[in-house]
Length: 80
Image (tube, rainbow, N blue to C red):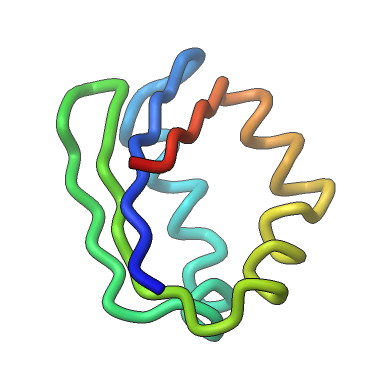
């Protein structure tokens, strides 16, 4: 399943979000493929990828440390 999402970073910059997002890239790559990240501004990006294992990806992104960091950075994700 191909997914495309708008990422808005309300309390940080794109670069700060990208550092965080890249920090769990190895784990995420077990569940997604063909990921493309496009910076659209200092506070926004478009991310697209194919989901190979939705349940595992959902579990990964629900981990407390990931949720806390997303809250700290003010991440708002909208599926397009």
